View 1 (cartoon, rainbow, N blue to C red):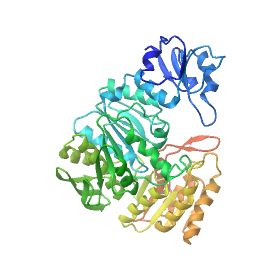
View 2 (spheres, helix red, strand yellow; view 1 turned 135 degrees about the horizontal axis):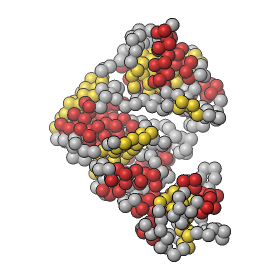
View 3 (cartoon, rainbow, N blue to C red; view 1 turned 30 degrees about the horizontal axis):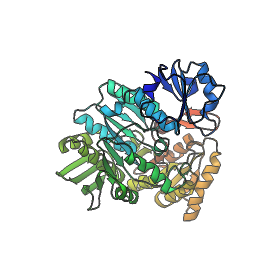
View 4 (tube, rainbow, N blue to C red; view 1 turned 90 degrees about the vertical axis):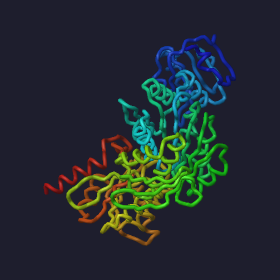
Length: 488
């Protein structure tokens, strides 16, 4: 494709080169440049893309896209734009033929519930006879193919390549988790959404966003992109959802438990077997029976129901799809055992998510709730004490341990969590920084009728330290520990 065609509808501030350069691909990482590529020199946290132009040129880049003026030393075509990230996203959409325009695209944003909601939507669409593709925290997948997700929402050029692959493979609907980072970094610019979903908002990523208002403004961007025939589906019970609804310019479907919700749970019966709910919607009522557990998952079911109704899926297919989904990896994922325990691995890694997990566990009326958790290093430090306070109030016994400590000392992270227990005046915990040993201590201490919650990492299969990343799966470690206890 000619460079001029790649730049279609993108405002250009300055340009050198003939414009008829043949572009073979788009790269934002200089090490991935191939001959004929357009290299996007983006601003970075530590170093800027301008530092890597020479490397990109050496690997055969045909042109550079950048917000910086062309240096005198640059010997290749240069395109200067006001916003390199926005321009990269739009250039990638042009290069790959704007695949989102020919797919039904559903974007799900919010703090909690994105992954589960996208899994439910995908299963409903599959049951209804469509061929959905999924992009999210756990994996990217379509019929016949999958890969582990390196990030929740891909960088814009990777996203457009993925959507093109979906289109070429016969995918009908792309169901996407859209993170606040992706929205702030304009990774989804050039994607038109048929349905945009807001699950809820609570404190997370406040190391990246200056505060809750800024976090909300980032999430809100999904609903103000250049949509094609967009419908918003919003949690009407969430205060931030209510704020969003008041500002939305498009048709909106609210969901929740309150009487004003358009898609509303009339009756909800929680149990250890799942959810049984009567749900009212503009066409009548439907009975949703799901293997998912907990009030938070009821909201996820309502979000997915609202989204698929907006897409024209029948109530009968929604009911079948909800019943077909047996679970989501790392989201209240049970680990089978013969010790009479309920053992759950969950991704809860904020105070609100941990509270939701513990409340759900309490609804199952266990003899005791035993909790294992830590907090990630180099991330929002303010939540650590809050997580400790939640655990102190709602768990019977807690083993404090490491999560992904990254460059921080695990004991310092744990000490911050301990402050939450001190604030609550509770000493119902022990400290074991080694996560494998912590899981072992919790399982050894648990008795028949107890529920053991292992929180924070969920589906992740690694643990990140300052100097290394090691394989680590909570579910695998639970299995290995149980086999060791049985052999003892």
